[in-house]
Image 1 (cartoon, rainbow, N blue to C red):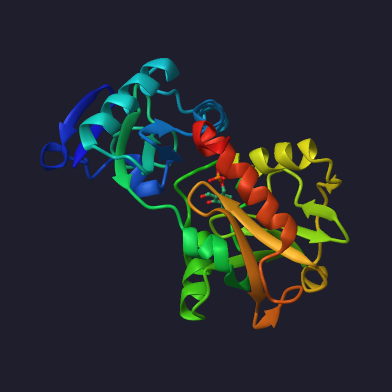
Image 2 (image 1 turned 120 degrees about the vertical axis):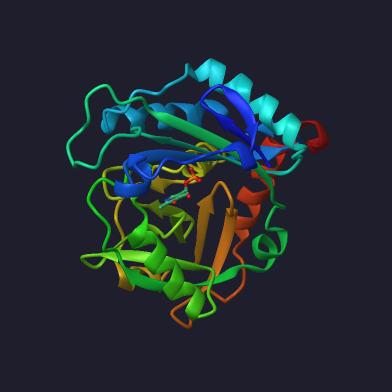
Amino acid sequence: MDILLNDSIISREDLTIDLEDRGYQFGDGIYEVVRIYERQLFEWEAHAKRLEYSAKELMISLPVRIEELYQNLLKLIKKSSVSVGYVYIQVTRGTAPRAHGFPENCKPNLIAYAREMARPLMKMKNGVRAVTADDIRWLRVDIKSLNLLGNVLAKQKAIEAKAEEAILIRNGIVTEGSSSNVFAIREGKCFTHPANHYILNGITRQLVLRLLNEIGVAVEEIPITKEELFEMDEIFITSTIHEICPVIEIDGVKIGNGAPGVLTGKLQSLFDKLIFPASSI
Ligand code: PLP
């Protein structure tokens, strides 16, 4: 596997991670996952903007300029021969003797790699099951930080229940999925949690909001309760990896008629046209 280390591409065997890298000891870092479709980075500008936002909020200075990072990622994708997959980018505050406060003169470490990963076509077509789980995460999940234990534990709960996703509930309110955003539709109206410090403002979420606006569906970015979740006609999750994926059952209870919803399907086809504009005519 080829790795982008700051601004050079090296092989995985030559990569060393220092034991005092703050990402390793404190989870003191940020990341992005960007989809690769046909060797291109999908929605790069939005991901780049969020990476800069996460860096700013944690007072980490990115070690390379965004334009340079973009060019290096394209080189990495080419070298790794990934056609459909994702690129993982991680920036940690740097390496220094262990102490909680920010070290002086600490240089951030950036690594990135690309992996082949097919689109989840069957899940998108048939829908998936979800469970609910307590949202026990910290209160700045708008930052895409490496601190993911709350997400990891929730996802494990889903896996053990043979479900795809855990829908997180904080004080009775649906926030988001363990690795996705949650949308709900009732009587033709779409609901999703507002983009504040309780959710990660997903790039796919932002794109879906644009699509809903384009097709004239009323959207309310307001919190919904766990109880309301079960009264919805359609529910879907969105993420870079899941794209737009119908949720047909939550905690063993069917959503709507227990099949992927019509509006969800419509959004999926609009999304397809954004991924493959040339083949959409
Ligand atoms: N929310 C959480 C907690 C996530 O981890 C993710 C993606 O991994 C998302 C939402 C969706 O974000 P995006 O659409 O940018 O992938």
